[in-house]
Image 1 (tube, rainbow, N blue to C red):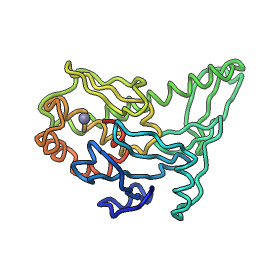
Image 2 (cartoon, protein in one colour; image 1 turned 90 degrees about the vertical axis):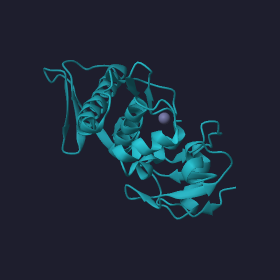
Image 3 (cartoon, rainbow, N blue to C red; image 1 turned 120 degrees about the vertical axis):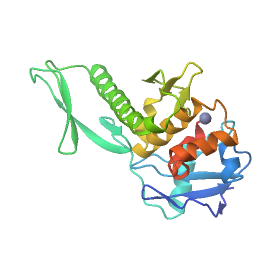
Length: 231
Ligand SMILES: [Zn+2]
């Protein structure tokens, strides 16, 4: 079932990438025909890249396959941890701090609150922090790409999209980014944004689209591993 085949991409962000033969692929058809790629994003998630119409394979199976391949055991973030661009941050709560604030300090995310807030409120604040982070980084990246863009987006919004969709571009020119991008290294955000920005002028996946994307971000392919599942 999982029979590794040679892949043009052997590593991504320090993680080993394996390609597996499988049925139909969409984006992959253009590059890694009939392959599926497994890789472990930092700390704990085993990802599988499937065609949009594919079947999701259970994480336990993936983990077993991954570990059988000699990959290091993966650890799963704890219930109070937060994943920010692929890195697991422990969250430290500071109740009765006199202010409501959130900041990064000594490898942890410190969440200060005036009162002893309930777990849901705290989780909401940490989630909002993550979405703000995606928004800020995306706006910075946009300025980097802007000189090469024929058209600027109307706006960038960070909002939950269907689980396997990382980004969307509407015909009006609004770019939507899934907060789940925080699960992946930041390079995936750059690739997703470049992909959606390219859709502003090519509203399809034609050869012209791929040429334009390559001109905008030449190394989009290794960055795009997470994006295989989104189109
Ligand atoms: Zn697309």
